[in-house]
Image 1 (cartoon, rainbow, N blue to C red):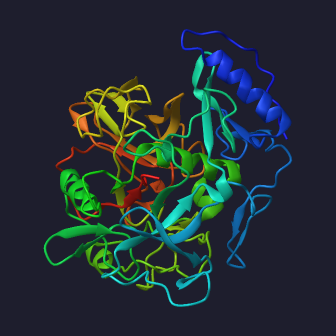
Image 2: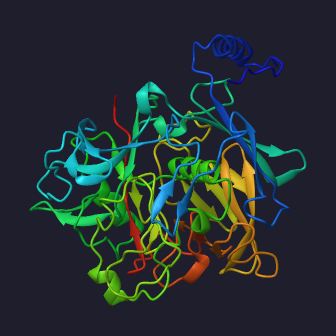
Image 3: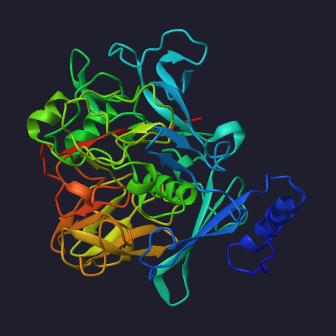
Length: 445
């Protein structure tokens, strides 16, 4: 277990007193005590050497997919406190029941589940915040080098610089759990309106603009409070950090699976149905990205979620680029330091990061810029980065106008797909077959 020994620094908000209390609690075990950490070296091209384990991660065996046996090797991470649980979440944000993680067609008790029932008043989701332990994260850029940073991930709030933004709901309250989608979003008509859902056996949402996606997601809400929406930036940063932690690499495709990225067409996308890996556990992938036989067996699955990269770009909110300046909002409320009431598609009153993209749009990403507020794609350059060096994923950008991001890659984008792949090239009005959206849920309690 790790003890925190950094000095107390007084500030105008009185955080020094709170930090001291938290450090004492951590030292005696009152708040848990596990702090995993890793450092990303921006100058190192080798994706595995780029990541160095620190604190309680030292000595841990990285996880990886065994592409020969078809089994996932958890290494030392099988029982990590942050591992999520698959479940069915009702529209009111409450868990109805948990799923068998090795066969989502079954409840945890072995009886049949509702993952494919479009009349079910809820969605298939992954629950984060296991056994009463939320996930607290801090990102510390290197002094004088924003392209390198240390990520800290803890099961307790070590001090006031550690945040649990993904657990914050629309009331500004930090709750015990948040939920991410098991499946790509699907459009299901409830008899009156189209609703964005996360269910098995469905065609995916496509050819909708960002505003329509948000509206359809919001139709899951039982009232005026925003529990349900599309995926958001804070969740994505955390999950990609956890993938980098357990895999000890920025090459997510090589560690977890290529995902569907080669041979895709509009017709093949139309034929896809969610749930291809319902019986594959929480992690599954292959070392091929081909879509060749219509089975979609090369789809990747991480932390219980299908197609986290590959197959289709997924649009998300909380991250906007305006005339080359990246802006973020980490919570619905203003506790993150933003001044916007709720999310928007313009970046108005978001936190201004900057991190103006450089290089050539559409090439491999060799640099991310890190701040306490997240990780931001910075440079695309095929002379510096490849499918097997640096971040191993593509980065598209347009430094003019307002750009709403997508992530993950498509079924015809080749090896540019991956967890670190981002598009900051399109506006909110873009409505293409290669772009979709998926759900998130922040319950009221």
